[in-house]
Length: 129
Image (cartoon, rainbow, N blue to C red; front, side, top):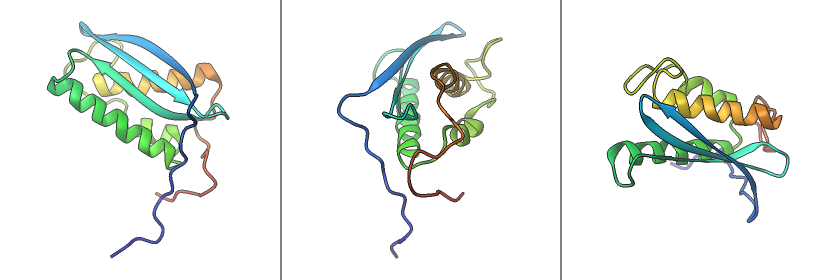
């Protein structure tokens, strides 16, 4: 069965503006990069944590890929981050409830600092959830 209402992807341009931030959580260092479309909407997220090849690094990279795919399919950033924030598990500290919370909070802060309209859909197609 094929879904005729499949989401369409808005591809990023070859050259893109981005913002990379270093975030600490309970002794862990995360480097989070948000790349933007020409209209200053977020379109791509990368995260580097710990050593490459570790379970935590692999899981966080997978989350970042899914985050990027959702953004490029037109899902508003705040819809994604609202579902990622405040999940509580280790590592956590006084600033973040988890490493996933740190990722979502940092992406939101980057978008806010850039003036992105995180609640708006960048694509031409309305996505229903």
